[in-house]
Image 1: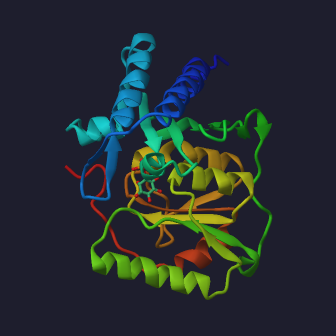
Image 2 (image 1 turned 30 degrees about the vertical axis):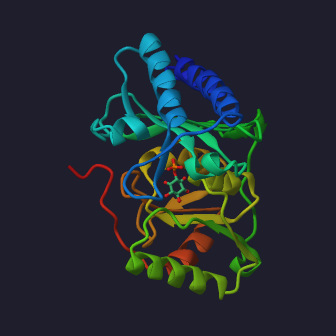
Length: 277
Ligand code: LIP
């Protein structure tokens, strides 16, 4: 059978590697920080430059493909997941980390067709770890196969989550209530890498049993969602229903039992969807 998307995936890997080099070089210089939706939702010229570099290189090779890019959407482009081949790009996942030189920063490139992710590439550029997955063909880190943890007991698990950039006290109360419930199960620990994509790659690698968050976006999730499922993990909505890429809510876990237990402890809320008009 013709391998329709291998060429695109090879291009994504090389674009992510090139983008990572730009990010590493930018870390050596002063970074001009701007804000987006709030004073804690940060963006830099490097986010914008890297996204344009990736989109330009893809357009030259695949002129009919579509894009959802974090910084293009911030600049007013529509955020539409159609059936067409679509590149879903976060040029720097972990922008706050990047600004502070906290050493977890990823370039995330997902690719969907018929609203289904066909491949995902997450390049953790300071660790030089290239996470990749093709639908039906497994997940890899620097070419080595990934497998989620086989831990069945949540009490012997580490759970990753994030605090996001919403500082509405009601939302913050819900975040802390969920965190308290999960911590007091009790679990072995809670961790935050500061990037959704790397948190999910940690689930795929078996280093943490689960990651949950409400408020991140499709560009944070698309590539890593396939990396988790191809490593044997499960994806679920925070209220236990099916995972919806545009809903800004996710539980990514090593197995369904742990995912369902976490969903029972989360104080759910629904931020505006990524595809809200
Ligand atoms: C960030 C995520 C982080 C999440 C933030 C934000 P950015 O992405 O990866 O985990 O908590 O809300 O979405 O803005 O660095 O690309």
